Length: 147
Image 1 (cartoon, rainbow, N blue to C red):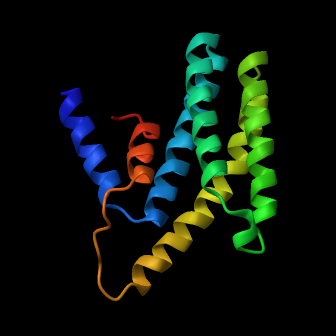
Image 2: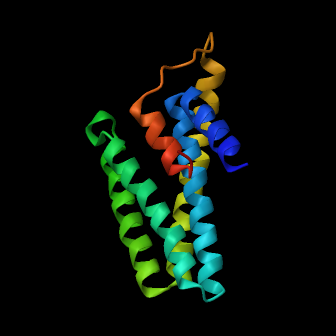
């Protein structure tokens, strides 16, 4: 069953454009932070650490892929990513659900904004295309928990 799910998600990630991949990563990061918060509230620091570490990996990948000089808000977004990474690490190390919640509260409006932008790009596209599989797609699949 896991291999079927894994193949399906990998295929989905490989066929989406960069905007959709970004929204998928944000969605997964929110899921990881939510699971981390729940685990911390239940007293399961091992499980919480695992979820929060996965969220950290996503933030690190977003940092690596961001070109801050490419647009006016790039440097500010990089600063947000740095803050998120620091706070997610701190939440995991200290077992602080409140600190993880602050991260979630920061990520949610960013995720919503990226979803809106991706939806607008989709509507604006004249003809849908299927991009070639790239290392970004493979990395996206891994960060989404498959592959």
